[in-house]
Length: 329
Image (cartoon, rainbow, N blue to C red):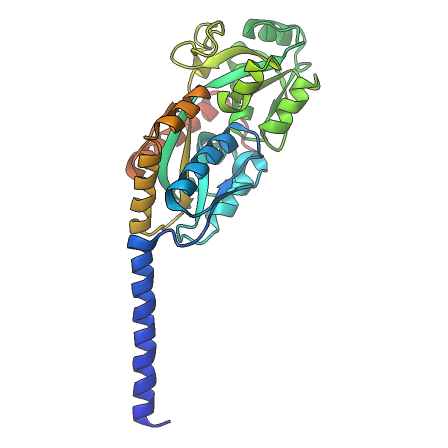
């Protein structure tokens, strides 16, 4: 090959590379998103995380004119889908629900966590803060949280509670209930709260420590009975249901956060566009109304603010796991 020929090919390769970089930059700055997005939900369809994800996905689809396709990948209390999302390209076309259960509880209850909640993800924004709720079946003999605690004291290990999976928020909530009341309740893990709630309604298990987005409709529909909620004050939708603090279970009276993230090392320009889109989306009165109907509180945060939320929450759960002497899995 002649020297001129080699020089020409080198220049052509350089031009192609520059064109590719220019296209990528243009997409990051102005043409994003140029194709459908995947929205990973590390829990089954029908739960609170899934409910919020689909509300946001629908709004983003309308805003962008590009489909935002929700993909449920449950398992291991949210770890399976979260790990899957972390391994996807950081190109802005894979989003993931980053919630307190999967990104603050799980990393602190496993001896060898599958992922780092901050190093392996790009926090984008919190979406909402969600009250927890202790629920039983409508035919359950338990009318109050104290009833459950008293029954558990009389027969240690006989009562059971379902959760979204080992190490998840609902699992730790049950462990915290036992620690706070000095009782022992047997844990029954499921692949998501949806299946657990089905068995609760069928009378197969005794209690579930859930969140309002997934249980609220079942409570309103007369299929579940709420015994207590985690909220600064009683919920407008459940005025007769006391907070955990009111029934002497103050350590359980904390709302949980539900946010959105992406794989680590997301391009800054894409991150800014996603943040701006979510800010506008969460200002939509109809969406706000719908989320509030789930008894959740809309809480947009900048990427930096949301990162700080995740950091604080991990520190808090690390302390809690130690305080209740939870044996890591």
